[in-house]
Image 1: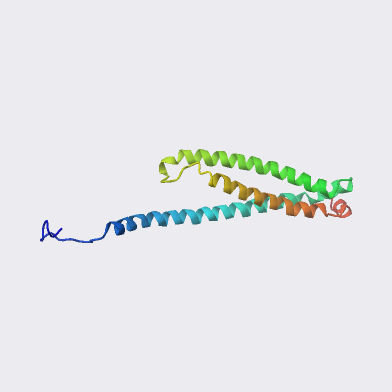
Image 2: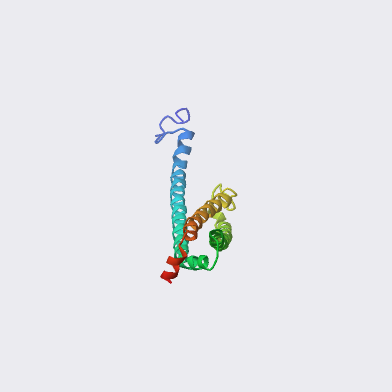
Length: 156
């Protein structure tokens, strides 16, 4: 620049790498913010899913005791709870994936270098939530299968 005009005042002289780094810094901060809030949302979804499923199964423990008093085996009780739970989970996942895909397509113009139908996201998150749901149904189902039928009949 001095060869062109020696009297030209220069301010904030930086290399192109420095300019790119400072420009990308804000995008990186925003990306990190979305990752943190997305992770928190996933954790809250997992805790909420676990709590709701646990509460729904725990409310049915007296019913499971009555079923066992009528001749149901513990395996039948666990199978019944897991079957009903997996049906609810499948419906929730189906609706969630459809809404997620639709919203992703609607917001596609706002996304930068991210595909709205990211296969990793659309497979990892549902697998995680299925695992949480299975755990949330399996733990109280095993507890319900050990209920003493006499105690369950007394509570009814």
